[in-house]
Amino acid sequence: MGRNKVTVIGAGNVGATAAQRIAEAGLADVVLVDIVEGLPQGKGLDLAEAAPVVGHDAHILGTNDYADTAGSDIVVVTSGLARQPGMSRDDLLAKNAGIVRSVVQAAVAHSPDCILVIVTNPLDAMCHVAMEASGFPRERVIGMAGVLDSSRFRTFIAMELGVSVEDTHAFVLGGHGDTMVPLPRYSTVAGIPITELMPPERVQALVERTANGGAEIVAFLKAGSAYYAPAASTFEMVDAILRDRKRVLPCAVFLRGEYGVDGLFVGVPVVLGEGGMERIIEIRLTNDEAAAFQRSAGAVRELVDKLHA
Ligand code: APR
Image (cartoon, rainbow, N blue to C red; front, side):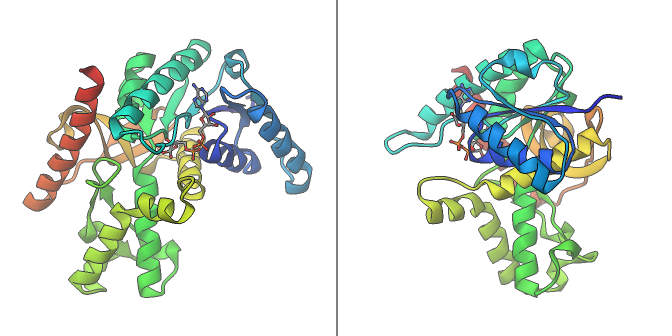
């Protein structure tokens, strides 16, 4: 059996950091692609030159040419624009939709059997664009959002209680963004729901901080957005798929009636393995949770409708 091959499109902060994690774990050979000439070549060579010190044998290639991506097992899409001053959310939506559509078409032409992992924001809408552009079945188009959101929630739970992050689990549903739906009753420390371990107002404070997690980082960085945690979250999904681990992770997937939503990408717990999204795990929600989930799906629907308008 040959080595696995992962293409990462977008050699910016998230893409290059994800490429680094994948290569340094020895998980796969990595092809880093960007539209800017020299950027992926430079970062790719720099990463390759770290390999002897880090001690891995993954090949890393930076390129502007999709022919180099041929036969990839996974294609990670991080290419896009950040929101610039004066640019509305809708402008960003249209620009990134155009970018995601073109890179997905180019990538799947060379890797017709790949699994697409989408990272570009607005995430759920970009997944939709990627599914349309690829013509892939829903099992092979998966959005990275829930792993990041739940990692943020776990971080805040561990900080609050002074416990190891390793013993924390967090359950997050819904779209990526302000309307995301953290489920405290399924968020635990060593199996104990956090609702047993802190007062309701602290739970609520952590939930709000989680929903605002991306903006909190942007407020610090000013000129950029988060990338270490997004890249780590992307890595976890790539690892689950390539090593067929059947990890149960919250991901944005195309729902067909599950959770009462039809025809939209929304974050739900899924089983990730060699087939991509192998199964959706459905749980019963309380009325409040179901209402929050529907609100979140409604926000995704609005964006998708704008794209098709
Ligand atoms: N083809 C290939 N690469 C492109 C294209 C394109 N058509 N358009 C833009 N890019 C590249 C840019 O040249 C840039 O190098 O995408 C890269 C994006 O990198 P950054 O600006 O550093 O953005 P980053 O922080 O990595 O975030 C990327 O992930 O988490 C999301 O919201 C985030 O949508 C954003 C994406």
